[in-house]
Length: 620
Figure 1 (cartoon, helix red, strand yellow):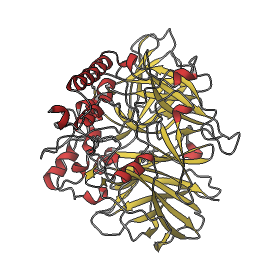
Figure 2 (cartoon, helix red, strand yellow):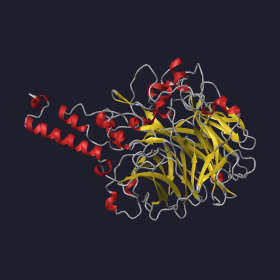
Figure 3 (cartoon, helix red, strand yellow):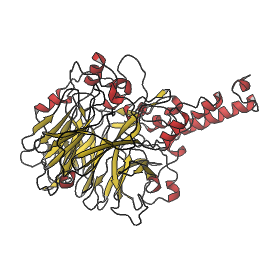
Figure 4 (cartoon, rainbow, N blue to C red):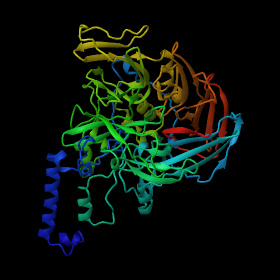
């Protein structure tokens, strides 16, 4: 009877039960011996390429959050209003509905003209490239999280005061597989790919025991390596892109070049083109954070990441529960890895499909743990003996990092709570009224902060002394033990920034100021679940300038320097502004970076979803 019901006529009941028992035995053994049973990734130093093929390809992705129950209450982590003033929770009411920001769009593979209002400076010549989710449904199945949507790439070509627009979906393997089967076939950050309904009951059951494969849905950012453009997420896959046509050219796997299970979507670049990034590896000794270096130039025209190497491997403080990170800081001589208490329970993550749970079941905020700043000399690969600590904080994006008079100054956007990521479920972004207000008010605001790390600690200095001797700096670096320093931050803003909901998506004049002292940075104000204003902050006096209009939601600001510019803010700010409650009113905004006044806009007669990150390809 059972054999007939499950469509396996040639398999006896005894054999069927034997297979079931074997599968249960395998998975239980796997659960008991995680690092012995999964394919393991060995560190780059002293490990053979055979060992590299033993990778456990579980991507360490910050955005991997899962399905939550679709009840009437807020999905994802819930929390009450902060009991402390410095956590910056809000009590906002009457937020407008923004559900159209997460509606699927059609690609526009051929350039279309835009309508110019004002003036687009003639000296701007190049492609403004943007990346983000653009398709949220496949057939009758829908993605659950904002980060899950299929990657849609955008290009605004600017030349001679005119602008054209085009877009293409990334032709990734998961995109093609999803379309071919007309349903979600590959699990994403917050969505589990369910078993194929065409399989019989027995086959669907066995598919629960399969390890999830990493997605190649690179929907986070545009990055450059050796002069080529790629779109990236945080798994081990990137795709090379032609920036002129947005065509998908080649899929590239990090693990073919270095023993890592992925890399961030926010690399840093030295003036000579050498690029640094970070990625995790999972070994028999536990989880490691790896600093990766990619050479600046190609040896042959067809290569991608050849020559990449691991500069330094840092063991996770908790071997089976490494920290999640979205980016890192870099100065002229150092890389700073921020080990924050957003933790990933690897056992829960790799068994999520078996348990019918999304990856968010394994990603959690642990406020009992301090934050650790690991400082690595990027030339020698040596990890500093000094351990720098701070109270629990969450950071996704750093602003800048530089060395000055024996100190490492590190500026970043921080909050004191790391639970916000699960609030970005699609159903939450589509809420309205009190339910939408409640989602927003449960999220801790993010603000720009500065930490000052002394690069040398005098052994004769007594414990309890503040080692930060910089004038007019309110940050502290207290020696607590030999080679141990506890750091507190300085706010890089005044009280007026609270009115705009804090600041995220920070950008600077990167070519002039990255890893150097600087004065200005730009970002999005977040008086909503997404950016709803553009802000310029002057660190001299911590003054702000703001561009904000009701019903308009600008993307991260990208600074483009004027030709021959000498002053740091001589240039323009580019941002794509989405209008969810006005049909086909998207526009490219151009601001004077110095005055923050609008110079012009290029209106696009289509609707575009709200995206993540972008870059400008200068064609001068």
